[in-house]
Length: 414
Ligand SMILES: Cc1cc2nc3c(=O)[nH]c(=O)nc-3n(C[C@H](O)[C@H](O)[C@H](O)COP(=O)(O)OP(=O)(O)OC[C@H]3O[C@@H](n4cnc5c(N)ncnc54)[C@H](O)[C@@H]3O)c2cc1C
Image 1 (cartoon, rainbow, N blue to C red):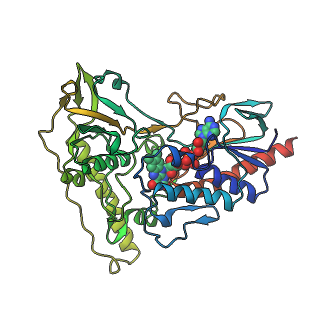
Image 2 (cartoon, helix red, strand yellow):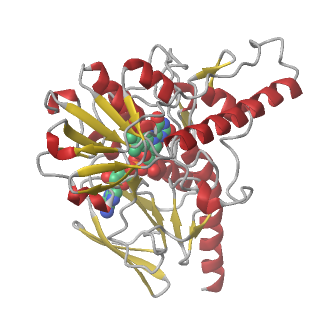
């Protein structure tokens, strides 16, 4: 089978690109191993809601138009939103098709799937950035009496025994799961490493509204000092709820969650925690202060001080200076550990020399280091919001220009 462009993955990124390709009448197919919005259907826990507000769900030529722009979609709503997009744009999705190999051959690509082979001039990798949960190597030393789960295995508290739970990692996933389990009357310990503190609302507006208005979410990859570092920044401690609640560490502590430092290793059945908890929290408080300063300066510069409530600062994160540095995992005190320690992409099917030592695709703003290959949906691909639903729109609209220029160059040199 032959086409001009093969798009791999029918999440928001692949579909956004499909719409851009159709706009330019570029012949293409979107290959998807599951169904449209597969990651949202199969890889998320039951209670998850988007942490981005509904009004920020925007894709090329499509956006949320329901009655609750300031609300946060549940998973069934996200699946419906994305599935409907595929229909509205008549995306040529071939579902149930797993890509097993992509090779660069004779100036084009061979895309091998479990449903046959495709040949094309250009490939768009839209397989997502969060395919595989990252679990530290020392997890192997956890005593077998402790049940361990990744966020992709965790669905709801019904899966858990009645005993205490340790959640490792305090980014969006970790704080949301820790809060849910604490609400079920189980004891929860949260191991806290580097994290990004965020209030749900500030000065009468949602924090995402402010981050968009001030340009923080649109900051570009070629404008930041250290893009490698920027691409590794953990997600902000946010959750979507009707109450617009804040999910920072102070909120969790007041619910009863116990904080310990970063889970650094296991020695003789003892979990070892870093002594850096206070420092990590101070740093997160400092960075939150900087974000609020940016917002306040923007409000003043735009003459809006009278239209929103006055600036204020949140209480510093309260940390128990006597939080334990170790915990006996063999004692039965902790029954379950949940690794909310991040996700990685899976490019095991990519037989093109474009991966760096960490298994990440080498690219310049989505233009991959191999002619005619593009990637979408990675953290800070072109802008801070790149891995959000809203980021797929802007990135796809820029990458289509690169892809079209490549096809034009190929045509003129043929
Ligand atoms: C827990 C969690 C919460 C999130 N919350 C938000 C949020 O609130 N707001 C927001 O804007 N973003 C959020 N995101 C980030 C982002 O929007 C999602 O990760 C989103 O799924 C990424 O869309 P995508 O199209 O880039 O990738 P995906 O949705 O992962 O789509 C990739 C597709 O590629 C397919 N695929 C993968 N490998 C193959 C293969 N070999 N062959 C064929 N098909 C393949 C997959 O089945 C999948 O359908 C969240 C992410 C996570 C992990």
